[in-house]
Image 1 (cartoon, helix red, strand yellow):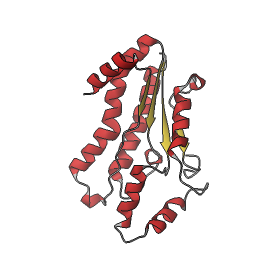
Image 2 (cartoon, one colour; image 1 turned 30 degrees about the horizontal axis):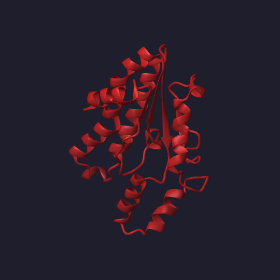
Image 3 (cartoon, helix red, strand yellow; image 1 turned 90 degrees about the vertical axis):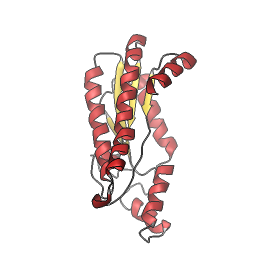
Length: 191
């Protein structure tokens, strides 16, 4: 299905010059309750899809003389968090993929970078809040707990992530390759 989607995009819009790998899932459970199927699905969506899509578009990018690949990783790709082992491991793998592809493709016209969002107001974040609420905490308690480690004191808006991704896809970022941009309100403390 990936090859077909890339072919359709090329017919409808022209050769792919920009790829943003933004699909992701973040199941949560204590280690003892993580099902192997959930572990595999998390890696298939968070890492394998990015690998396969990158593989599918780099030829056309090289031929076209321009390419930008931006992987949406997470601060979970830089540090650990409890109860989301599959998510953390998959985002660490996506960071590794970003670094490897950046080096491999550096001599060509393709740059590969990653954005590492912190807590962002998305459907995934709202799902995480709902999941945590199952432990008996209120939405306000969960939100306060999530913001406690964000020095800027608020969650990011999706548009703020989109602006960073747009920059990485532009000519202005032509000398950036292998970069991991934390967009987390200083929560990672400069990791």
